[in-house]
Length: 466
Ligand code: SF4
Image (cartoon, protein in one colour):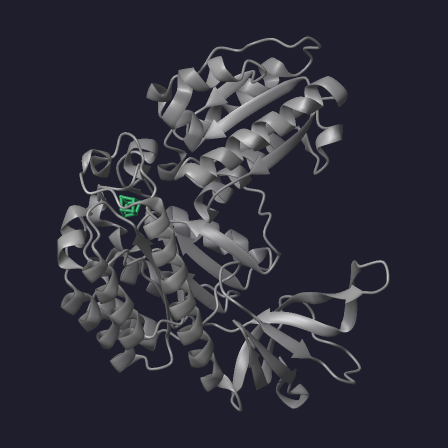
């Protein structure tokens, strides 16, 4: 059977889609390869959230198309959000693409690959209609080839979004919010646990909306409590919480369930009530302050991550100052600051009061400097304490004179429960003279010695290693 190469772009939710497509392909006898030059079929699973993501998607498609000329590739398939957004124009602009599949018809990947396999000449397959709407997320457990490190896996609990924030195109690309049935998620989590996964990371466009479409109240609470009963995973975290949906019951669950990480990822986007209204998100500075206070009162050690958008239409210097002041007061552990990206097809596209890009960029730089300074200072509170760390692997260190990076067996990297994979910092671990250094996927007790930017430096306490 043909060899398939998959390039996954964008967020962890998209990565899960890629892993599911790979699972289907392997089940049907296709082989996977990580080398584009060896692949007979290349799939680019795209992101189209904002302009830089779109550009990366197009560049990757063009780069992969070259393998049709100089490699073994005879079929190039583009899937995901870019297809949902630009279906026909995309195919016209990129004739080297043989087939495209939107986010709601990924199940057809096997059919498309079968159709293309065996064809020597470049040939265009028809665009498949997104009307078909496979809605795999709601179906029974699917095969999935997890590509993250063995001990960590994302778990998609829902697809789509009902919120309609005025700057966001996602509801158009991914459709309305649909929760996966709890028993399906539970089964998948058990299967992941059986494969050695120690950390489950729940993802959806809004994890705190889980179950609402199924008539549940506090669906995420019920789900977290159920998943916490599964043997094997030691950490469970959820990403992308919507501020208005973070209830006391949810905070209490994080506090009382040992396995649920004291980690809140809550994109706030802004704090000016006027802008929050224009963003169609609701809330006020005071309501957001109360939310963070509620979390910190119950869980003083919890990490709070957020994201903000600067340069949204109508943002005045006063709005920006308010945001800056809010960040100084609330002291987030991690914060991302994004430039407003004007997206056709969103409600914000029609708004007046454009902020000049030089002003928006200056605000982004200033806010980033501030949140980084605060986060790094906040990080220092861990120094001198002993914490639990999930070991991830060895650290690459510079190796002069070639400049190549090599791994040293003495320095490992891990994460605390308050650090999510890929986005937050980590803990650099000195294992000293250990006879048997801890292995990736193991949990160890670590004494934190220092802080370096977003990273912490620690020494493994061997007497406590598990
Ligand atoms: S919550 Fe808002 S920003 Fe997030 S995906 Fe939904 S519409 Fe977009």
